[in-house]
Image (cartoon, rainbow, N blue to C red; front, top):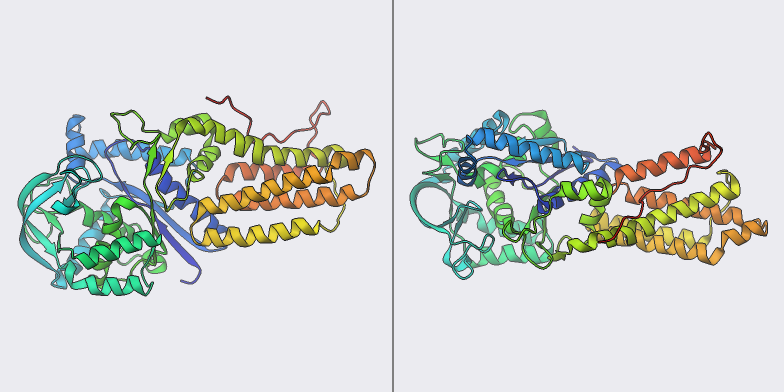
Length: 492
């Protein structure tokens, strides 16, 4: 289908409630989905929960619950958090669903027919926390690099996938940009892994009960990572659903740096094996720390997105999470700076600017402006901002798109101070019509650019401007209704 856009987020292990790391990638996808819709593209956006595997089974046992009951409760926490953040996914895929299981078994059947699956013996290291087979050279001081815990030594019969058969073709497709991996550093990371050699990988496990049974031999379960990757197809009703034929291949996978290998090597190889198109782009976001340290329950620095929403509101939380640093890089979030950033950027920035502009239009012109030309300097600034903004949005550089918008906000603030509409009004200077019309036009541009980021607040502004232009902002006592978009909060 022309003009379609299919994007996905990682599906997170259903082992605990979501934190801001989970929220970041899903929110990032939501902003991109909203932007794509505004460009009149037909968008399909999926999120979900990874509900199988030994770590899920272990957590359920620790909670004295059966695995299905346990993941049902965790899935509800994710759904509640995404609703609070106003994330508008089209499908929330759960790997315990009948739809997913049916699609996975079809996929495995297709793999089996290609003769790319063979029995073998795995003897080595395994990290239960990330459900990942590891080599000695991947360890950091003998520990899993992601979880900083020693991996288990295991020996078990598995079925393996002939990964090495497809590595040359995957490398070729990465180099010719048929499979685009961004940023470049993550692309180079994958090319280095391929260059240094990577063995075939297991697609089944012998001693894991909580999962989808491997269909060709008793006692084997489909390896949770293989099964989880297939969610990008099963969310569309793979293999025969109209939606799958309409939207696949994915236009964008958004993932974290820790799962780059699975998505940029294993996943393309599996798809090549069954003759299915590869994803077009894989965007890999960096890690972030909290107050200079990795998120940890022990340290008590895990931030619940629901806590942020209750304090700042959904739109402000959305802004605060994506405006910290470029997503393609690693960065640090200082929790204590949230209030300062809220007041600086939102209350004193966009909120104050919009209130000033609308207040002057109401006070000086009763909300009614004459048709007039706009100031050329602001026209030029809008054109430059718009060009930069769309370039960054099309390249999924949301941090820089926000920078473009807030640079223009400063431009309008400076324009107000230079033109001094209050003086023009006092002196009954006719130039005030052009100045106010220019400011209103600039404000409407800002709202259109910020709509994917802060959808509810921009809708409030649109409705306010509509009523303002209709002269419907008087209360029963005759006072004007002021636009107070982001009230200041007490800084910590």
